[in-house]
Image (cartoon, rainbow, N blue to C red; front, top):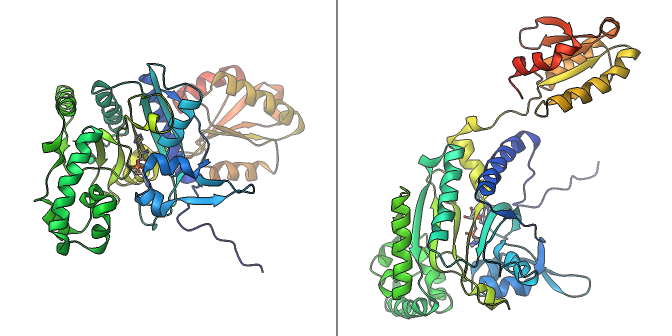
Length: 426
Ligand code: HAM
């Protein structure tokens, strides 16, 4: 027998059982976005490598080590998108979307990063992301955080996530802070590990992100960005804090929060949880007011965030497992006899017209009565709707409760109202 071909490491199959939870979560997230007037945008999965190098920054983990890049048949260097912001900005510039004042967009789809796979960290993973163009904030920053807080409430997990915020200031403030941080890191070079030492000159702010507890302790004495903020950014940040206070959203100011992508300035934020081990960030984002210009567009302020759906699903499975409804169907239509077979198709369509939320599978008379009922059971159907030869001449139908085994015969005219009361559907 031929050897099986395995899936690629870090790339998962999502099976029907699990998809029920995914769909329910996605539906909830989309409903909230819709309620705030955000519009969906669908973007390519493959972009020119240069786009990510320019947007995310050449000296970031993502661009240095994690991109799936390849030459296509013409020799163009392309990359499977590691995140959605760069593509969204590219598309926004191309279609002049981002110059409209009220451009609030969202997207959902797979992203690719060549990271070491572990729980909550995959090489193909899904994000739902939001990008708002043309708004300085901080009110829009607050709106994004409120959207996410509403997501948590709707998903029933508000108590299992917490918000951290920081301001990286203007690009100039960031540069001044960078100098002070480099000076501190150089002074303490012998206490750093090799990775952090390498970053001193390439990307010193990423040292603040280290997971090494000794270095973290040392960094407590490092200069903090809050002391280097320009007046406008400080005002922006405190105004955001005020808006969050007014909205009763708890948060922690974390001066070490810098995010892993280079395009951020001013507000940055992350929602974290203690339930996912080391992959604790469920969602992160911030302002990126220079990116549009950097990618060739007109200077336009922008802010956004993205949530990792695998992490959210894991969190839901851990802390709110009852959110997922099962994949069961409501009804299974069992049919016996030629005349009944002909009627079944029409009856099924009439029921679907009358009851759009009914989940029903139809058997067009394949197999004996007993066999069809066994399939109904296997599908997890709550009831079987049965039409045999007798029920064709009397225009009746039988409902069989597949839990209690009880049967009732009724006129087909009464079927819709009986299903509504029996299955509690609309
Ligand atoms: P990010 O922090 O790189 O930001 O990713 C956002 C979220 O994607 C993370 O918080 C995490 O939940 C999820 N994620 C990232 N890498 C993985 C992985 N390997 N496996 C599973 N989940 C992962 C961005 O991507 C920015 N584009 C967010 C943004 C939008 N900022 C402004 N607008």
